[in-house]
Image (cartoon, rainbow, N blue to C red; front, side):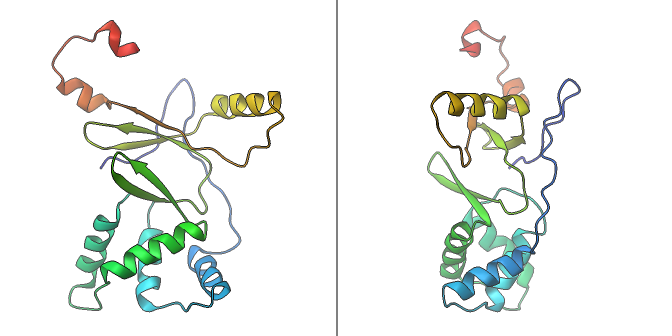
Length: 176
């Protein structure tokens, strides 16, 4: 899967940074305490792994990565991963997106509002942030007396690499 922020010389679509008062681990511990649950070593390993880098992943990829990392140590169960992913979404630490029939997650805590380009051929995701899109969102909300709490936008199509593999001249219909 392809990840990354889009850089443009004409506009800056990079994500930037958001400062947070607690680490993801501290925030998750607080959430679990509020629900009367305890922090286990498996949950701790999962949170550390997910927040070590900003990647998009599905549950099966995460299970595979965690169990490869364990190398004879404590393996994480499939049920624990699925349960923990739901808890992390509910705690506001992960964002869940549905791409076709597949659920994909990304860290949400400490990351600014952003949107995605989704390649329907290779399933790659490209992140971008657009001030113009945010301004349009605010203008439309203002026009309707609507209070915005957030938005999600995923634009589907073909990435540059997959489009180049098509071996045909672009058609005017590609612009529709």
